Length: 164
Image (cartoon, rainbow, N blue to C red; front, side, top):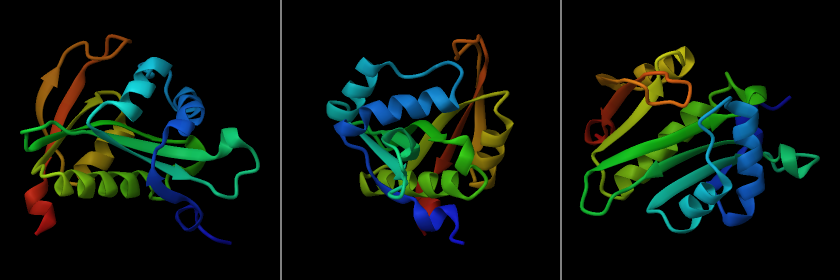
């Protein structure tokens, strides 16, 4: 039997992924989901890189996307933002978040960034462990960042060190 990482393809998101991205967010997040309008903007106008994990063997379109990650890049800035990372519960614990994160770091480096930063909900212990394991460091606490009133840890990683 092949592992999830052998089956799932990593590729840039396209506008035709919009329905599947919305469905994936619904399956993964209880709140703080992107609206359809926001998704459309992020995929077509924002200075962003969105990568998806696709199951080419999925029987139905609504099962095709199994994860995504999005990096926002700013012109004239060496800092990039990991805006969102999402892996469907069915394929978690198979290294997919690590794959997405590594690919986002590589894209940020290629775009000239030397730092990748993110906010993570203080109650999202799995994400905190992932980012700490990947050498992200907490540098500030942000109150009431999320719709549920939850706080966030702001974390960052110096990518120049990771690239050496």
